[in-house]
Figure (tube, protein in one colour):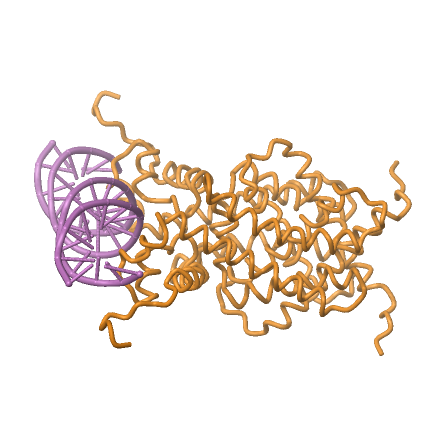
Length: 209
Length: 209
DNA sequence: GTCTATAGTCAGATAGAC
DNA sequence: GTCTATCTGACTATAGAC
């Protein structure tokens, strides 16, 4: 308090990531810039380069943070959904949509961007965590004998449907008011999907000439 | 051929839109610029402004073109899918994914961007055509008594799932080789979704304690 | 209708003061 | 660790020659 007139953050790096995520959420990847993040964080445009070598590194850190948040949220949503394995999986779709609505569209753009070299691995690691959560839930919702490939198939379909649902909500470009209605619809759609999938696996292979 | 050493396109406007779509497909919205489109089209960076008042207008024209293409493709896919209404609807998911794979990721970014004022209507008009195709197919796949709201719900879920599936394919950021396998998976997922939906509408409300 | 040239803006990144 | 100042490069858009 006594030493300096210019403020120094205890942890500017953390603040930059938080503001970066917020900026992405508001403006999307196209509106993202190191300078803007710096301004939001209350520091000069040069300051971030003390913590991140370049734009890509900051972007990757933001992406990793989003994935980490999502993995936590989805896991918690599953826990709160009770014992039924189908409901547990379906609940993650709702949590995903709620997160996307809270954080607006920016999330999706992280999926769009492909990170190069070293950043790629950082992001992938967090992305992997999210997939692990879903794989476990999907495996419990499917018959024990289901192959990993089939489980992965369902996870992929499940995740991409939730992602698509959340993203398209913003294309209408009205800020959706009735969040919980959309969440409920996403959960219902996910439930339908899993049940349809189960029927295909279980049902008698309908006649193929 | 005799009058000019500098080439003049018969229809530069059309070429610009084509190249704009291609650029979006390759680089996404973040990589889109009037200058790049001009270079791709083999003209100076000023030339596009003779045909489009500003960047937004060119972008809107590209978006409208994509929607128009998609609507045609989806309608044709439904026709070729035979008489079963569920299969006809499911086939559009396959066509969507195939189009997205052919044109890489950029399509999605058009969904992301919101166009202002006059451009908005142009794009919406084409977007509407696509929705009309899907609404018709969905209405035929559902019981005749289904309300329009419920039909719209299914269309929304159906479209967003196809959109999400196609988009996430590129996040792995390897150019997916086995296009037809992905198309087939998207169709299967769409079929599962519709069947699950039908069961929810028709089925006895499974016991709720 | 397309060109060259240019004005103005903004972002990425670096250098050196404190 | 953060600042100010600055360089470089890319993009939008306009003006005027051909």
